[in-house]
Length: 450
Image (tube, rainbow, N blue to C red; front, top):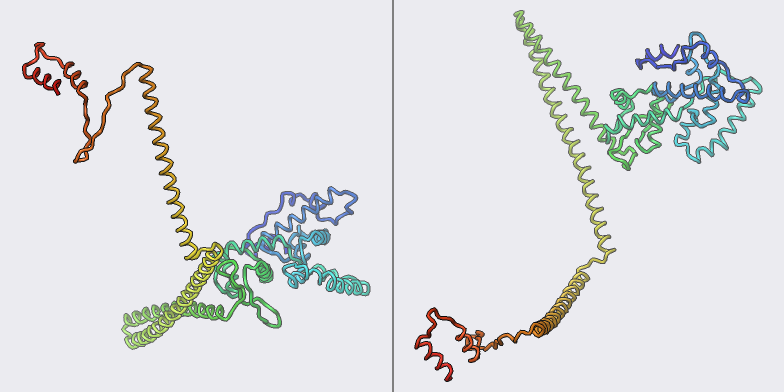
């Protein structure tokens, strides 16, 4: 079966080959077996890159991390011509660690050091020795080697990233059956070729600690049964009894919803038949369908009540889980606050002592500031007076009037002027007619006689 025909049957669309695929002469060379690399290194490497890139592109397009030599030969047929060089390409991809055998991957999906050690020192040498002995006696089984399944690691990682982005992010906190998970991937248009490819992707996601898996034995084969998608990173991936209980409630809820939809359809059908027989004047038949309609309505009511109870239980479980999360947050916050207070030494007695010390220090600082400001003001005042006297001496000015403050009973300051100063002030007064009244003269003499 050619590649294009196989893809059309799977409804995956048409894969685009490179432009050189239409060139018969060039493809004749590409399909031929590899010559020794030392004869023409550049052509050898170019041909190897052509096939490795084409295989990776095809497997990503199909969502098919698992493949075999026979699969590739059939998919890359050109007419009746099979590519004869793909066994060398697969050998090169294995040496460069681009692919792993499916059996080795399933034994050790994480490709851990312990698994590599066991495979390298125990399993692989034993299987290699047995193969050498078998091939030396009966010859190599080319048919079996062409059917050996490989896993393309880059394609596997790309497919897992696509599942995580489109499916896991939208369904966090759910526990799903294998078939339900496949339906979700199909609904999100995540292309995965077969159930084998699904299982390999889920194993890889489990190794990444993104999903939890539960297996079951079916017909002697260990298969994936349940897939747990955690709510957030770091949640427990083990599927507990509580997870099973919630899953069973959700399944029952889905079944009841489906049954209610079916009952509603049956009720509509019975209504239509009752109306039809009533139009045909077949009243007994119409009554029969009305009775059936009443039974269906009672059944619908009972199932509606059951659905309501299940939904209430699910809401209670969800609320209890959220309350537990809030309580855990309170505990973490309380313990953190206690640790911070303990590390920083924040206690009532200690804080009270520190505050009292701060108050005393501030009082002392305030007193020092008052003393400094007072002394400085007095010094400045004395300096100002001295400067004023020096300026008057330089200008030849007489000393200004001296004002001596007196304190009376009313605590008010009075200004006292000497006699000489008063006479001088009176003499400086001017009168319009140049004469002084008799009363004014008498006043001046009286002042002089004092």
